[in-house]
Image: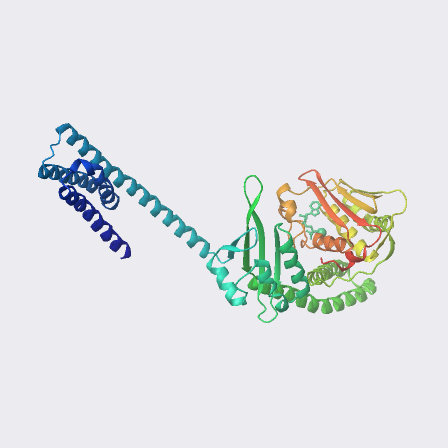
Length: 469
Ligand SMILES: Nc1ncnc2c1ncn2[C@@H]1O[C@H](COP(=O)(O)OP(=O)(O)O)[C@@H](O)[C@H]1O
Ligand SMILES: [Mg+2]
């Protein structure tokens, strides 16, 4: 509507300009003094508003007015000069029309692209905004504006400063405050999660600098995603697994107790009765170990894994593990060896470390075909002690190695051969090692073997005991 009114005004101005120029030429009775050039702006205006055809017509009309004015005041016009003026004026009208058409089509295209980009930004579930290097918001999408209103964030200031206003309402105010203050100071990329105490809503925020190809930071991008439903589901699942395992533990303890009593009376059983008893004992032990693993994983997830530190010896622990696995290795015809020279003292929870070693040795035996070899190499490092468990087994496909430490994950080499397991052993091993301030690394080649390296600090640094899992 406004556009149409503007155009009418411009066309009226152009018409008035043409007629005004003509009237002035006649009025002062001197066409040459004013010249055909005075028609040019008005012809161009017609062309710009109505396109090249109308622009050309306006050029013809201006030449006609020029001719009439010349005739009226008695100035003769040479036909060649007239033709040149027609060409010039028609050319101006057509050129103005063509370039204005080009400009408006470019503007329309730009407008359409902008609208599309805006729609794309607004239709994501994530709140997204772009800030300049000083932290002022340059662009924000609709979900972010909605989150800002729902969370009651201040309307002005650096994004991290605005988020800082939430600190008192989060479940970990001190940690949240520290993170936001670090974000204000440090422009590196980072991700963080926070939960609000009142609504129990959980958000995950990410930020990263937007850099030019030459590496200079020109802006910063911030995203905020609500992950309340995901976290809620995870908690439900962990609570469920924890509760079920806990409930299973009591009847299992009683079954295994009665099986033990039955074992004492073994001589009264028939030979098939004895076979059934063995199967029952094996299955019960396996079930118990699965339940214990599930409970331990629930403890790890809830950050409740307790360690009991005392002087220990990694070489001794490795020797005990190798000795315990001896019968299983012999049954498979696997050459199981320990390679160590002397003791490897450290401060650790010996029982938990033994669990890690047993887990890794049992994996090595389980995933190594009969007749293979498993070697434990325990040695001293720089301020730490290491144990490497290497086998000549089935290995793990290279692209699956990254997922091995996720709960319940089992590599295709294991599932394809239907080798039993739950996929919890490595998760537990890593959690225990990391709680000791150490690390666990795994290298493997499919069909050739696997090597797991556990590195543990000799002395516990106070901070590493409090670390999460
Ligand atoms: N020494 C190994 N050789 C080959 N694959 C292994 C080895 N150790 C672990 N894996 C792979 O990692 C997966 C996870 O191991 P783990 O968490 O101990 O689970 P589980 O032993 O119950 O299968 C295994 O299922 C297997 O696919
Ligand atoms: Mg295992």
